[in-house]
Amino acid sequence: MILSKEDSFEEIIDILENNGVVIVPCDTIYGILGKSPDTDSIIRSIKGRGEAKPFLHLISSVIQFNNLSVIPFPEDLEQYWPGPLTVVTTVKKGGTIAYRLPADPFLQDIVSHIECPLYSTSVNTSGQKHLWKINDIIDKFENKVDLIVDDGDYEGREPSTVIDITSTPYKLIRQGVLKLPSQLLSQ
Image 1 (cartoon, rainbow, N blue to C red):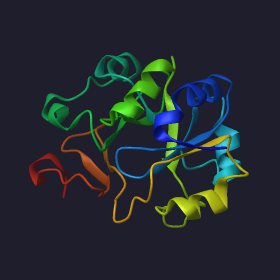
Image 2: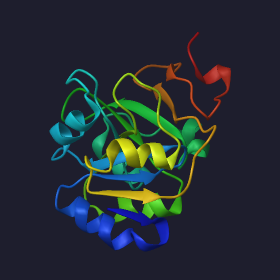
Image 3: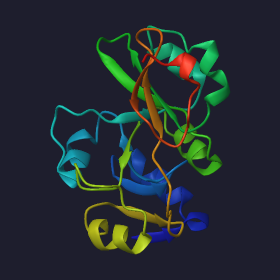
Image 4: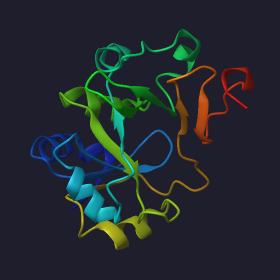
């Protein structure tokens, strides 16, 4: 199913609540979303992605981050959240997870309506560049997901910046659209 952004909200919520998978416009690029942890194997199958590479989780607030993370959200990063910054942290249940608090109001509304973090990953086959032309996304993924939200082409957009905050200075994992000051990052 393909819907416009304006016509898709209720359908997205229904699909996600029933452990379906959707493609939606995110802060930076299109993303594949599903409830964590219920849709892990589905999204991995869609992308051809191995078990070793985790998905980032979209959350609804810094409070939610602090409830999940061993490390409180750093004050020196507050100006970048919500926004295109993904933060890897140690979590209370053990291990590390990458979280992002989206700035896009449409995406914020989706995340706020679902009571658990949402997996989010770029729209591509694992190891390939992300797709930004909506027709390419539809051609490749229409029969693999429950819904694609058509918000037009996202030409020239970069994914989120990813940093690891488990030590300071923070470690840059992926340089994306957000350019952080060098004094925050390890060299």
